[in-house]
Picture 1 (tube, rainbow, N blue to C red):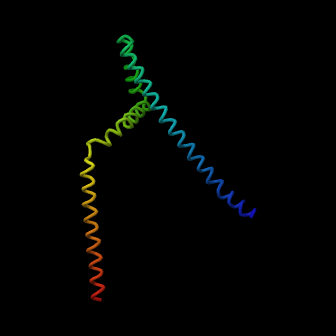
Picture 2: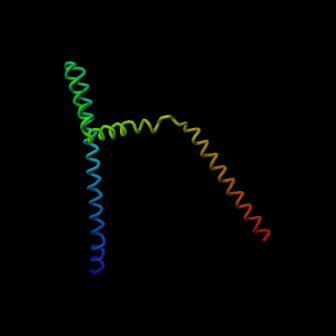
Picture 3: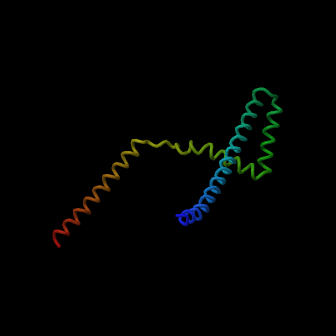
Length: 132
């Protein structure tokens, strides 16, 4: 029994270590995504507050800062593109809108045709069985 437990521990330990590494990598990815979203939300909030409460020069300076950073930093450019892709992905998923009734009708028709083909195939097999 002791040998069996030792063997199980030897096999399970690398799997647990691998699982821990996968969880750590996922944590880092999710954390980075959350920081990215928080940074853009903070920037949008700063722009909104700037529009409503501060002079126009401050708002222009904030826009200019972002434009300069976008022009100079490849990381900021990539983060901006990723953020807007993530922002518009749910919208693009629904656009152009699909008709669920038409999709259901198309799927029913495909299922009916498939059932007819299966029935014809089974009937052909039955006929060849009767002949042979």
